[in-house]
Picture 1 (cartoon, helix red, strand yellow):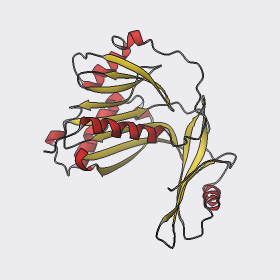
Picture 2: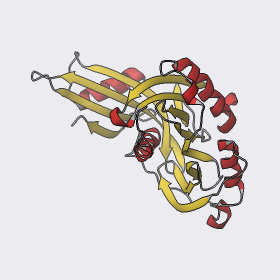
Picture 3: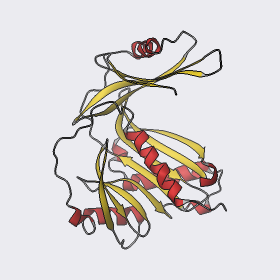
Length: 269
């Protein structure tokens, strides 16, 4: 069995957290003043209860480290003997975590991704609020991190109409160790999800932004993203076109799905 670097797993979790909540990083993420949980209550109150439920242990020695502000909101970083947790600073809900022995992965063969999926979904149903009430679109894939080991990634994204909402839950199972990574973002939908700008128009805008021809490959998805205290409906359009030197030309363009305004341009570098 490979030696597993737990610190690398933490890095993977943080990167994935940013990917999930920062799809439109150019948008304004200022938050209104809201009541936060007191740090003094973190180690004994609802946060401790949520962690005990999450880990299935009879008790946890909870240590509150610091408050961190992500684009999706403020969280407290909390550590226990079994893992590291990032909990919503308002509700105490666990929004991301890395825990040892989170699932019984050692009894599953490395090729049995279906078996892991069943266990991961049961774990999500127990810990992710309102999972059964949402229309969650499932995706899975296997990622090879080299010396850090193999990762089986299971993701459920909420859809309303044609749009992905900010609510998403992810389980990463590391079959070469006893560790899992968890991300669970649950946000209320504040806006309508019917775009006024069509997918074709958004894709045309992206191609024109990069001065790309008809040979370019283009993919897009409709997403609800944070916009200060509110939300915004956008098209996230990915484009790529091969140049004469076989180099990739293009990038990602974020288009307001209501006004058609280009909100962000991220070229391939």
